[in-house]
Image: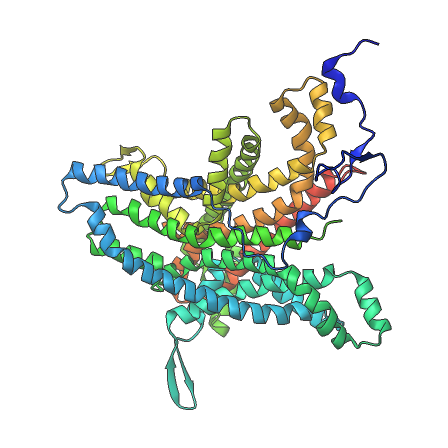
Amino acid sequence: MPEFPQLRFLRPRLTRPIPGLDRTGVTAATTDLPVLLPPGDRLTQPAFMPPRIELKAWHGLVVAAVFMLSLGISDVYAQASGTRESLFTTFVRWVPFVLWGFVLNLVISFFAMAIGTVAGAALGLMQVSLLAPVRGGSWVVTQFFRNSPWLVLLFCIMLLLPFQITVFGVEFNIPDWMKATIGFSLPVMANISEVVRGAVRSIPSGQWESAESLAFSRRQTMWMIILPQCIKRMIPPWMNWYAILTMATPLASIMGVEEAVTHSQQAMAAEGSRPELLGPFYSFLLVIFFLYCYPIARWTISLERRFTVKI
Amino acid sequence: MLELIAPFFRTLYEKTGINFILFYDQYEYDRFIQAIWVSFELIVACLIFSTIVGIVGAWAQGARSKLLRLAMAGYIQLFRNTPPLVQILFFYFVLGNFTPSYDAGGFQQAYIGAFGWAVVSLSFFAGAFNVEIFRAGIEAVPTATREAAESLGYSRLKAYIYIILPLAFRVCLPSLNNNLVNLLKTTTLAYAIAVPEMMYTANQIWSDNVNVPEMMFVLFVYYIGLVGILVWMMNRWERKMKIPGYG
């Protein structure tokens, strides 16, 4: 049979290298028996790794390009119309003001996430209750808040909650941003509830059965066996919801809460509503939110990858 | 229609003070019907365009050109990690400033109005998520199927249209369903650029008549009803498209 060099790779390799032996170069030993391969990268890694944030240069380039492009186009327009001050100086003057607004965005997102997580965990556990009315009621509440638009819920809380409450004769003013926080925590609560329910359901029933055979009560099983295993599974979706919540906080600007978008609009108004300012301000908002949310998204993906149970 | 329900709601208001003015006042009723149409058009347009963006984007993600792939990745990351509200404002105010306009009797009227920009920005926003969903579906199609199509002489585009996409579509319908529900809820953001859809009109009605709780009730019923209809339709479609033994 003639030898076809290009078909050489078709010949089956009956032998495979023995790890550890041929690598040192002492002997080029081979075997046709299946050998235990060295442990994968996963096993040699330490238990907790700092997040590997795969920010590549072009990610920043894309963001910067959008930003510079809008600034450049606006500047050309500004020079054409002969305005008094360079656009750049005007913009830079207002950057701290906008960033200060962004801090309020973060504060709202922290508090809304905290309230939403606590309430959502409770609601999620009610969804796996053995009592049918509790289960049904919490399901209805979850579906209601999960399927309503965030903006409608926010309007609802902002307009229907009193702006002043009296506790033991002392009047408290509720600031706008606090009401917005409550408004944001409702949809977060419903979605965290679904996350908790999904995580509890995803634990194999063998865990429940073995706990039962070890005479654990239902409460003990839940707290000591099921929930500790759930936490790990819930972290990636929880972080995902945090990012979604942070990106929803600008909605509060519609209600006049003094956060980043409101501050940008106030700054633009203070500069006489020059149309060429719109580009820099709105792109700046996009950039700061992107810089905050993108690392969270990457971290979530890497955690998700690590926590997946491979079948 | 209005003549049928008006007496009931008028009596309800007179007896209890629950003011569903949109169901007995001709002017508010017309506004409400108009809003239903606008928001329905907005939702349908966004659903269709975002799905198209998803399908085309998933195809572009697997393209041979590296530039195209990079552009797709940049688009997805940018739209997934920035607030949709700021995106809408950016599209409407910034890009809207630079698009051509025509003279409409004394003032400049842009070719793309608030409604157009809402459709564009929401479609791109949801499209960024759809691309990832479709990509996951395409990856779920076995390589053997792709190779079989190739060996039958299908080009990359033809194999994508006739072989891979129909199979991938079935895989990604559940997550597509989720994202479209999310898009439906996000269309309320068009409020920010004064598109006269449901949220905006409800706001106008309660500003004029000070009946916030009643209008809130109408809003909740409207949106949860729409979500229910969408989920029901998608589930029906999913069952209908199911290939026995596949997926």
